[in-house]
Length: 81
Image (cartoon, rainbow, N blue to C red):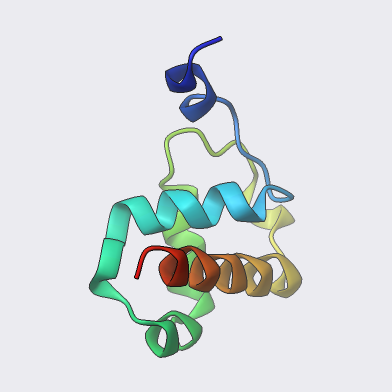
């Protein structure tokens, strides 16, 4: 299996780090750490649902999932600074 195949693997709600990596790939440095934590959950949920390989259902999202995604997104942003 090539690395490209890993990028195409399905992502679900429990894959917080994978979701965060996809969001960082999409937005890069458009958001700083403090901005990531101020993103409205409604916007964050929409962006997650737009990820090509995301297979979760909107109704299965929770505040806990979205908080975890935000935290992992911040870690991803920090790693790339």
